[in-house]
Length: 110
Length: 114
Image (cartoon, rainbow over all chains, first blue to last red):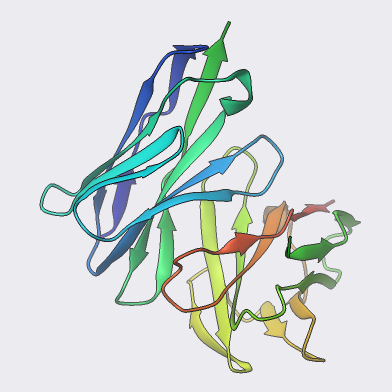
């Protein structure tokens, strides 16, 4: 079956670092995506991992371990505007669909 | 910067009525998608469209739903006879290839069925 798990909510302090984990099970893995979604808005693309390892893009980094079915999104130097939901999504090669996690709501406190 | 645009931003309709949600994907993109997100729930895939035909669809996308690209720029989602449970945000997305390397989302249409 297909399943994506991520924490429902996390809280962090402005200027700090936070790691949001995602574990997945899918029949035909075709890449893992992280999207940011502010309340009432569309998801916006953050990162895409298809090979194991760390992808760094500015303050955001994403890590993938295919053997463990595990990814994390690392956010550094947190800013208040980073308060949003972070959605983990997995591409399924068997049907070319994106399977979405429920999202992690990140609350940034001053 | 190119973007996916959706109209209307909000739509209120009576149960049983037909609605058409419109999207203009990014001009050089070839793959188009509709997703929905019921308030407080996860994003759900509805359908993907390529070369003027449906390439994939989910269980949600039943006979009440249809998609069309009538004029080479617009991409529409039609719900034939709306139900209360169709109330959701509907997102259109487009990408250059099938593997979702970067799908761009529109701002969504909030559909409320009363």
